Amino acid sequence: MIGIIDYGMGNLLSVFNSLEYLGAEAEIISDPVKIGSMERIIIPGVGAFGDCMRNLTEKGFVESLNEFALARKKPVLGICLGMQAMATRSFEGGEFKGLGWFDAEVVKIIPDDPKLKVPQIGWNNIIRKKEHPILTGIPESPDLYFVHSFHMRCNNREDLLAVCDYGGEVTAAVSKGNICATQFHPEKSQDYGLKILKNFLSWKA
Amino acid sequence: MQKQRLIPKLQMTMSSFGKKPKMVLVTTINFDRIIEIGDPVSQAKIYEAQAADELIFVDIRASSESRMTTIDVVKKAAEQIFMPFTVGGGVKSLEDFRILLANGADKVSVNTAAAEDPDLIDKASKVFGAQCVVLSIDFRRNKEGRSRVFVKGGKEETSLDPLEWAVEGEKRGAGEILLTSIDRDGTRQGLDLEMTNTISEAVSIPVITSGGCGLARHFVEGFIQGHADAVSAGTYFCFKDENPMQTRAQIKNAGISIRLHQ
Image 1 (cartoon, rainbow over the protein chains, first blue to last red):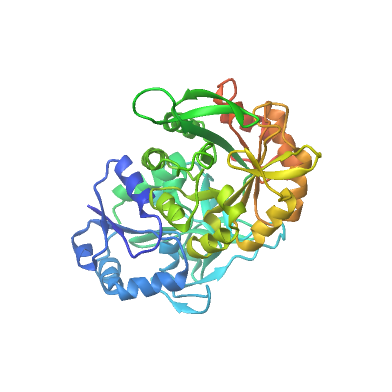
Image 2 (image 1 turned 45 degrees about the vertical axis):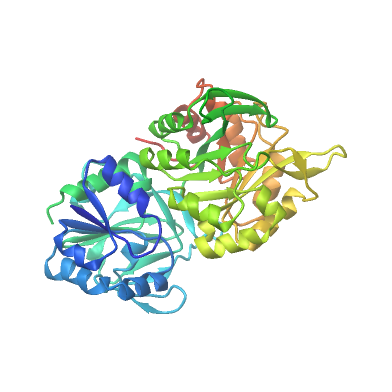
């Protein structure tokens, strides 16, 4: 069973629908106690970082997520804000502490081309920084769908899985051991996005 | 590198045939002369297979007939289509935004309600984020030859100037402008490049231009002369002589950065 973490931040339906389309059994989880029985989990999310961490904390998710990801080392996929939550801290609307799974900070995108707009909304091609099972079977540099104003800046370059060019290097995906995360939305990126989700479903972390 | 976007627009209306009313896909000319041509969701599936970048669903008679866009179409689309889509038509309140977003829409477009109560843009942007608030501007020249914003599916003229309204919409927190020339709608004579360019230069949010595409060249003009971030078309794709795949190839050949589906 795949658990989709529901902590009150954004569109879970698209993620749920895409897993169902792929034939996976998925459950939306709003009670942290249920995480323990999941085979793997997805942390989605759309919105602001401060609200995200406050919700995760208030709903009691932090401890059970740490247990699942760090102690038991089960496969985890973060999407968009769900990826950013894995950083050490974020500077979106102040300074907030994150889950700290990646030695990274979440910072605003500042494109060096003034014509580029923030948020970045639309399709951009990713540039791979390393190989990973979730990128198996898709083209070298596919276009995927992004909607974001902030991105994760990694202090360890080896955590970088893919970047995209948006007036400078913007982090598109990260991975470390049993944890991987994407800034783009695989559930909105048509066939290549679905393939990434499918890869995650069979990933033996 | 980020890509310019090609966005099929699915215009819908409530079918006048049969016992159970349902949403059907239509084309229009000058927002009038409605022709029913099929089912919106199955057409959307075809557009997905042809790698359209996004979709826009709009219930063209919702505001004039006072109803909210049918949730059924949104739900079905969200179950079957894995790409971003915008929904519009008859959206009046924050609650309407919430319902459409919760049922799978990525963005919601407002036209009539925003013109009547501009604060709706500010509120929706604050609650749901600018990225999901699309200000739809339908315009045409009035009898005095001035361009004016029209509401209620093009039936009612307002005193709003399209350029000023676009600038105000951005200030109030709209994340995108969807510009449609009623005079060009369905005519296949080409986009209103002048208005597209004027508005694209005046705002810093993305502008989607539509109304009048009849040839692949018209899309190219929308990007190069109109400086649009995206071009949307309904009629052009609906009759199936053209599709997003081949149009995209022609846009690419003109040197525009667009997604090519390998």
